Image (cartoon, rainbow, N blue to C red):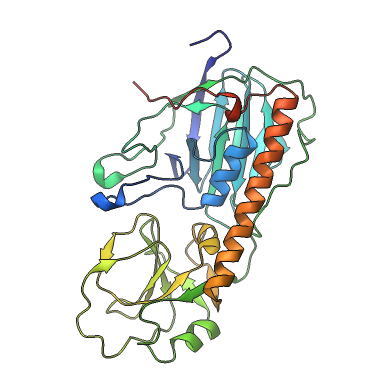
Length: 343
């Protein structure tokens, strides 16, 4: 380790309902039967890392419900994204979706998430943790839970050594951050046709005219929705086939399932629609009781919306890189330390 790199101990004092090491998931794992996994809300996880000068794929922390508190032994540069929540540094409110200069010994609290289910916490540098098939993302079925516990000491390898910014209430930079519209009420989700759409007469009209409610049986494998369904006709026995993230399945019971990043990779249920890729981060924030409606869009429109979101992320990444390098803050493009694994 060079003289400019520091190992910062971060003491976890409260660990929320469930907090895990997380990243954007595994690449090239699904042909071996292992789901990609990764952050449920990929947009929020990516932005959190961009705001602290990391690569989008860097390890961060996914916080689900309750109260997460921690104290870094030394100064850290951090960002919190995801659902609206109350974030304080030594009791002083600070903003989400911005880079934050936090002094060593400060008590940071993230609590009262609302309008969504998950927050993402990123630090400038590399969190030391184990990796499975190249990713820090949990894979509990393979004995890799990645859960963070109360009292745990996290190790952060960082080039950040502090930055003079005495007013925590003022933003460090003005950045073009694409913040999703988390809000109360009913969410609207864009969907496109699936392979069995035509086999379920009336499914287009039904999905576009009714509201559906996320049930408590939902989990990281998929959202289970309470609402009317139409079972496809005349299909006979469906041979088990690959199922992508965001597939709308109608099993034998009267429920609708939207598959998530930890789904099984093959199934024999009919797929009547797919969530547009740009809608997947919002679905990753859906909690039990959330209502949603669906809007049919063309494949071309779904692709264009996703490309526009990626253009916004790239704009943010370019602006953050320029500003970080201009004021001599560490940035991944200048050679941050490589990902570390815990001993």
